[in-house]
Image (cartoon, rainbow, N blue to C red):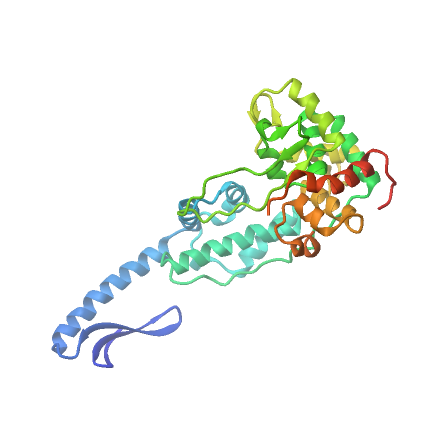
Length: 358
């Protein structure tokens, strides 16, 4: 670091992040001795910051990042899950210690454990975003170079009617709440979170409607935005399952286990897929496990695909909670529930008595 002059100012000239930088200290009207003293103070402060930056671990940076997200109202549940996979390798390291081989080593270990490419890509992408946040907020000097694996094939799986009926039957042979969860996914085309958030006060048996929307007051301090949810007509299969579940309801949430709300239904859904034969077994002995490419979101894509060409796109868009029909056609308003009747009947018919191909 050295003293220099630029545009009428005494300046500190130094290298930061691999680039030459200048920091204004005092106007040139000040004596050089004063400027030198200011340079010394700036140098001390800069070195202190650099020392702090270089000592921060990835565990500390991750905590700071999630704390910042929480201030904006974002949920960190899935990020905490990602960190469970990342922390053993990265928590104690500092950014300066990382090499691209560390990122490759994590990916290799996760692939060896049978984790999907998309999941591994997501984990490392979020670590990269954390480091970007740290660099932008001055917690570290710069984001280190990183490496990301391929995302793998896009998740565009669509079930055939035969597979869908097998999944429903597989769910029926499991726990009641899993069966109800699967039926509602097919009946509403909703996202799994919307179905798990559904409460009994938004199920209207008299009118025959299911309202996945939650009327929450806006909070201008929060940056969260909940994706569109639909108000849909109740199908025959949904009504039968809901009537049965209502007899033994134990809390305000429709899909519940015991007396508590379900945050996720992944294990039960996977077990239903296994009973339905929608997957394969990998490994031998104790390492043998069931692997499936069917997820709750697969049902949403399936519903949209089945409806294509059978009803107007606008009705399918309303069922899926899309404000814009282009979203429905390219990737898969708050309508009156009866507007979804036609598409709900199409799905219901395929599942109950329809053909094996659509």
